[in-house]
Amino acid sequence: MAQDNASITGFLEAPQRLGEWHRFRRVFFSRKIVLFGMIILIALVLTAIFANWLAPFDPYKPDMSSSLQQPNKTHLLGTDLFGRDTLSRLIYGSRTALAVGFISVGIASMIGISLGVLAGYFGGIINIIIMRAIDTLMPFPMIVLALLVAGLLGGGIHNVIVALSIATIPPYTRVTHGLALSIKENDYILAQRSMGSSHLRIMIRHVLPNAFPPIIVLITMMLGSLILAEAGLSFLGIGIEPPGAAWGAMVNDGYKYLQDNPVLSFAPGLAIMLVVFAFNMVGDGLRDALDPRLRGLL
Amino acid sequence: MTAFIIRRLLLGLVVLVLVTLLIFFAMRLLPGDPLLIYMAQKSQRLQDMPPQVIEQLRHEYGLDKPLPVQYAKWLSGVFRGDLGDSFFYRLSVVKLMRERFPVTAYLGILALIVTIIVGITSGMLAAVRRGKWVDNVVTPLTYIGVTIPVFWLGILMIYVFGLKLNLLPIAGFTSPFVDFGLSTKQLIMPVICESIFGVASNARQMRSSMLEVIRQDYIRTAWAKGLRERIVIFRHAFKNSLIPVITLIGMGVSFIFGGSVLVETVFAIPGIGRLLVSSIFNHDYLVVQGITLIIAIAVLLINLLVDLSYGWLDPRIRYG
Image (cartoon, rainbow over all chains, first blue to last red; front, side):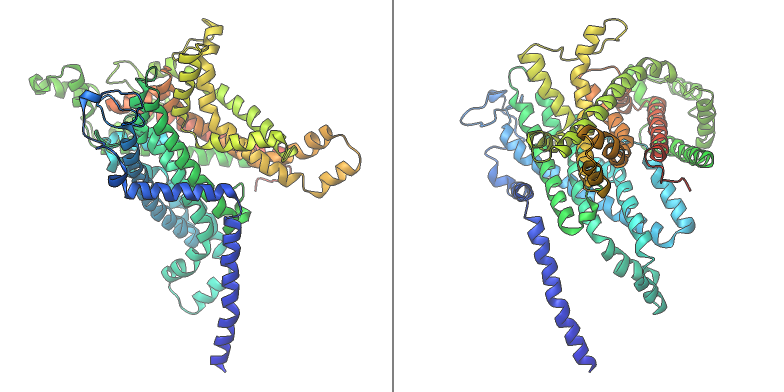
């Protein structure tokens, strides 16, 4: 009998899960613009992975004989002061953008989400300490905080990642904290407690999965703003060291030759914009598909 | 209400003290001796410097005392309106800021006004004329507005309006009291850059919350009573759509300060954003501390105002 029950519930659950997935796909791909964003992201990831094959020239090797060329047949987007091919540097820059974006999001979300769950689940003194610490980070504009940390650590891509991770912890903590507060009031949490589950188990197995949809949307959106912030920092001269390629720094380098060779500045800026746009659109699509109530909140 | 304000102010004060601790200790714990960097920049012959001189300077700036003592000294100065002296400019930080803060504030306030007026109006129009040409223009523009890097937009505008069309000066700042015309011309592009993100996000938010509100029953009732569109939209729908937008405006101040760092760099505007960037590179601790403190206070105050305005917008909100 117990066996039967299990198979019946198993049978009843299966189509429903499938329905979820169908609904998700239908809503997610219903907007053309989300699809467009998805295509850009896939193209970006492929570009970053296959940069070695895609780039027509060595992005780092200076060649003074072809300094500051206008766009032509060999150098489709021209060359910079050191004669390096702009298109190749643009292609390699996608690695910087993606690496900084993904690693910082990974670090910040892990720390931020853990703190948020702890604060929301336990409440009391833990909640006060964590949330006041987060409040302390809130009044700083993200770029100012990142600038502060990165500037004082002394630039370099590792320090930019550290800086951006610290600067973006608060949103994760605040969102997760709010979710954990409401999730822990559910009866199934009480049931788990009464069955003797540890707090850690409940947090990982029950609170986190239920907080998952809004968090995944937040993560996608944060990827866009991180890439924007990384570009801002490298524009200000903090970030990857020369001869490395970062889009923000390329915009700044090209700025000096704006009059005669605007492509140098325009191309990397457009790349930043396209990528941020793609992340935002995919985030929008995920939000609509996973949790439409979040419209306007995230 | 008074109790709420007092509690919020107290909480703000606690956060502010934590902010000063964070700023002060983070800067001291990170590598780099400010005095050595300063010396290296000034003389570039650090090795020739007798150690006694360095020690004496260190003593002069109080850098030889234990950190908690330095912190206490700095904090008591803050309450007296003394933020210490800049190593680099050899000027008091307050004096440095007094020249530059009004520039950033003027630019920022203009950007905030543009953000509020243009953002809310365009979002409202897009919602009321959903699917019509206004909406079809506004909505794609908001997507661009939230994704465009501000420094790049600045450079783009400098190229088009400054270098090609020769319509606007490409950089610099003039006080509006000295030459209003030139000042305004110089500010057009920076204000657009600083407000673009806010305009776009406010418009987006306003559009979606307005669409939410005009679906409500009481709006249908208002239409059914035969009220004119202007009355329905402004009297009934407008105020009720504002709450999420006001929250965004609070965050907008933070974005504007953040943007000023980039915008002032692009347009060579002598404000605190640019000063912050150069002071970070110079490891000019007290200047960085002073500027970040001012920014944090401003953002905290605006957010307090935002919290208080909810009650005016929606009397159902009680401050419990």
